[in-house]
Image 1 (cartoon, helix red, strand yellow):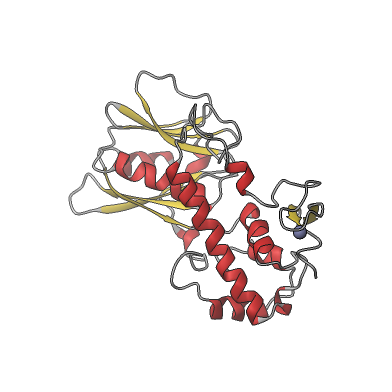
Image 2: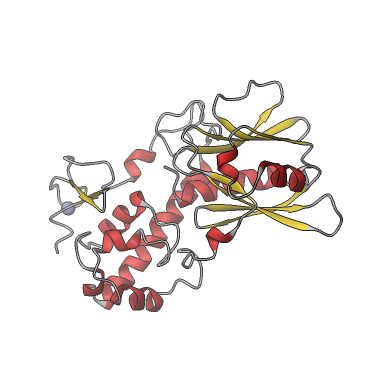
Length: 283
Ligand SMILES: [Zn+2]
């Protein structure tokens, strides 16, 4: 599943590629992903519109467009769901089987592909209204973080996935940030000391920033055709293979902790896997 770093890396890749491009045609193959926008509304708004910008909010893309009607701006919200991919492909390339939305941009097609169709591409942007602060933004301070954690008795790992607390911290980076801060994932959120909260605030930013930095510097095959488990999209052929080792606990159950040598443990919290070192992260 794509996490915040993947979405940010993809936004950085798509932004210059889409800038100034005009949508000549719209082909919707899975109307479900547009909801609540209808196919007709989507088509009418987008045909003839020009891309003017792209930003990220949490794990959402906000595509900014200049509508065909002069002085009218519109925003399209995009989300990759669990299996979505968004990329540009040359016209002559065959369309992927699970293409949900195809935008004709002239020489290229913008393709939103999704094998399970849990992602979205819609004119309804209300989903971003209830999101908490960006983990890498200025509004997310240790003080605010501490205030919010004091109000919750949930295990800290579960609370970190609450998108109204801080948006875009997913399952992988929640485990990684807790390991770096030496905090047990089982500890109740309101039982963290301010020193621990401050440390965790720092490690959340650190793991996300490092992943974005990594994704921005290696060749990645955005269409994911050569996907081999490296990053979310799959790396390009010949790209170095060291991403997996960057994760200290995630998906490393039974392997030795890099700090103390103890075996990394996997538990299930709120139906999601959590990985941690029982010795470094004591309750
Ligand atoms: Zn350890």
